[in-house]
Length: 511
Ligand SMILES: Cc1cc2nc3c(=O)[nH]c(=O)nc-3n(C[C@H](O)[C@H](O)[C@H](O)COP(=O)(O)OP(=O)(O)OC[C@H]3O[C@@H](n4cnc5c(N)ncnc54)[C@H](O)[C@@H]3O)c2cc1C
Ligand code: SF4
Image (cartoon, rainbow, N blue to C red; front, side):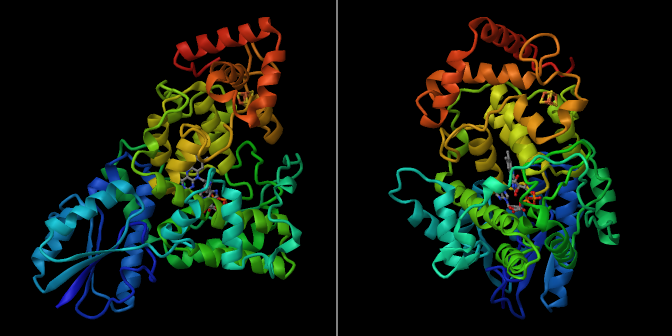
């Protein structure tokens, strides 16, 4: 007699709620299934990372004397879906008397699992995912009755709850947030530090070859390989970040530079989101660096806020608002995604850089996702459903619970301002201030209209003008609408005509 314990690809944590009472006689089921690998056509590197990390985790569990049933994608009996694999495992072993699963991170899959209670011949126990700092019931209680949900206030409560960066009742350093110290442009003479980018081990190399053969049409490159796929590797990446990179994280958090995909970012979301690293532990290690005088407070606070603030907050918003969160389209945006989102082939240097590295590494840092590709999608009025799918597919750290609020809400403002109190729309001026992209671009960032005008300039003002009805009532947009009204009508009309021609051409990729 025993229990079937299903472990999903983003549940690679030994302390998982579905494993906590595992014992002899139980079977841990892990399955590579086509349904999960292809419901969107994920980046090849994302599939390879997850399959390799799953195979390593299966060995880790076997090392802990658990009986693991691991089904590879090319197993001849593979049923192609998690539901099918659970049913097959129960059929093969009639001594299994129950199924235990930790709830998944996507609404779609949770809905499916809830039907298993009727479909499976044994009881199905769906357990909460306890790997987050704030349980969903606590988030719902926090959100209940509030007129407006804002991350900053949620974050302060999580600081109090965890004690992170607290001196008694007060925030360390006398402030909750040090963002005003964090928006520096990268000086020319300063290069980002070298990164810990482990080569593929034998298990990973096998998976890379398999994915190359099995998913040739999926987006993205498999080489160069840049991710660890074991817990020890993820921990080494964490330690390297904390000791070598974290001190510069705050200062250069919003900066971008040509040919520099990583800057001072941690590259840890991929490991945290699949369970190889624990978010609270990462934050506690970062705090120790500050307490021991090895990293400045603005860097450590900024980093911790991203994890205990933004990461926990977007998860709460996702589950609070699903189903239906991704269905809204407040700004009435309907244009198809231009081809260059897939190829990176455009004369817009900033877009070519962000998309090119996304293709190569399945990674772009936050400001590239928000202020380059996201900003373009927002001001060009691209359809949220297409943009949401793109972000879910192209990044190795993308799971719907974290991707959707960031894309639909933060980047596209398609949720009417639930995630962000004003749209993150910007002209070329912002990109020029925060990067060196414009100096190598075919477009002229100082030109608002005319043959070489930067598309971000005329699209920005066109976006502001065409969304007046939806946005002008927002107090945080008042200054922008004042600026719009002060624009010379001839120059505004030239920008709007150029925007219309550009959009009418399907966002022409070349000058
Ligand atoms: C349009 C858009 C889509 C995004 N899609 C995803 C996604 O699919 N998966 C994902 O994990 N993040 C997503 N983000 C958030 C953020 O961009 C990534 O978490 C970050 O770039 C990951 O790289 P990093 O580990 O180097 O992060 P760092 O900059 O080093 O930040 C540290 C950690 O903070 C957390 N974090 C930072 N910002 C956020 C945020 N806004 N939401 C949630 N966690 C955050 C991550 O765990 C990250 O590892 C998205 C942001 C935008 C604007
Ligand atoms: S000039 Fe415009 S398109 Fe070119 S890199 Fe700068 S912001 Fe991007």
